[in-house]
Length: 198
Image (cartoon, rainbow, N blue to C red; front, side):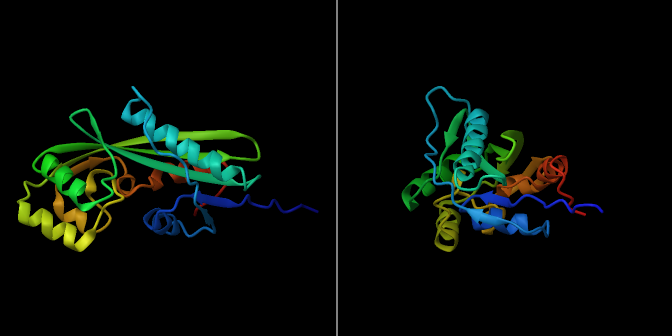
């Protein structure tokens, strides 16, 4: 008689409702846990390295309370002309960021990690994207901030919402990466862990 293999618990290590909504597209059961880590970049750290380090750190923080689980961590860093664009946290900073990048191209580095806390193994992927922003007027920026308040989004643009109206064009191997959780890469990772999506 065959013993039925029990699938490991899947945990999304994130406080983002947008990452949660994206993961729900895969129609698999999962729980959510807030990793609550320091997201400050390290001195001399490249943007892509920051994103990968933070995504991995989120999985390990959650693993401390969820042994035996598969834990998803993701992080995104926006870069304009070599400068990391952090979360603006307030309207003044968001206005300055959007004025800086209007009519320009910004690179977004979205890192995804899947940590098997039972085996101690980590899969990691980095999905780069390029976004060209429209040449926005000050009035358009103010109108956008009135409606969206994207103060906890890298680059002050919530691309999963009204922020899409700020974009002239984008290039990415995975459009969900720009929202913060690259589902194409995640499906591959989960498959390697024996989790079937379809």
